[in-house]
Image (cartoon, rainbow, N blue to C red; front, side, top):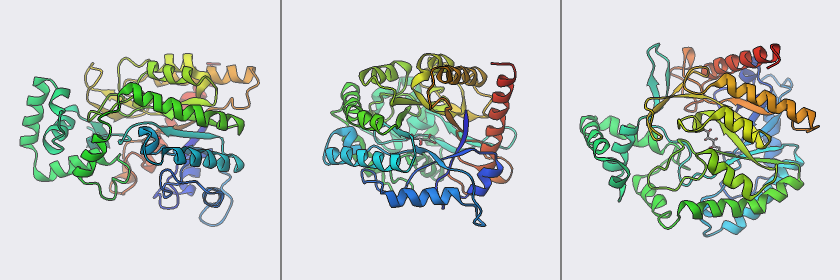
Length: 401
Ligand code: DNO
């Protein structure tokens, strides 16, 4: 398993030098500054490759850009509106440019409007570490009383509505603002300025798009881009919904194994693959992570290894991001399954037998605290996670799985 690390580019507070000292073997990155829908040019791709290949003092890092996360799919493609056809053509051109640059694994997601959603970005653990958290009552308070989304009442039962009202009434003005900011952090462009009106408008545009229709749009997109990717020797891999339940009345179509099966079977090619994110899928008790890896391993092109602790047994419930080997996911079983898949690929002569993974997120610990790193992406918390995961891999390899 190739030990990779997400790097946000030259502005990332965690440098390429830092990743080398964490023992990283490859880099996951994206051209975050290119507007969604536009072509990634060979020059921009080459520039990022140079940045990854070079340490601060100019020495070679020995690292390469192994995985793109993400080549984003535009809202127009998701809704099949506006410029969606031009965006699909641009996507194919970007894939061609990435293939020419030698990059083979391309992650994306198909979540409408929102990417990941949390209510807390720095939630204190008993040992003083902080982590990200999704609190369902806070989220309901946001939806009902801050966003005031039409129809939100129908999404929550009486008890949850009452608890959310009490929570909202008890919140200071500052906490209400913080909650709104945290929830929309995953929205495109939200880090700059996204008003609640913008959010309402983006959501309203999905009023007529059912789950089935959104799935049909994903399948249309994949029917076009997968053959191109396959011809170029690339592997696409769709990231799950995070959290893996419908939110804000928006359709969600990549939350369960059945969701993945529908999309994998509809475009049944190896190049149409999965980013198995144990943290996202693991927020639901009915997702069997090692089982998904056992059954769909040949299509898993990228692994996000992260662990969440669910606070209730419900499908939709609160959770927090635990340490990589704590939480509810059986990380050792998942890694064992990934190693078995690698062995199968080797036996079958697959060139892509080594599956890239990254320590996904990490708690803020030690000197991470007080730094303004990208939420979820501290240097030391991730280094600790990677070290733990590396230990599991070494142990499993020693005992021959
Ligand atoms: C969060 C990430 C996601 C992921 C995208 C992939 O930390 O795992 O934002 O990059 O959903 O398209």
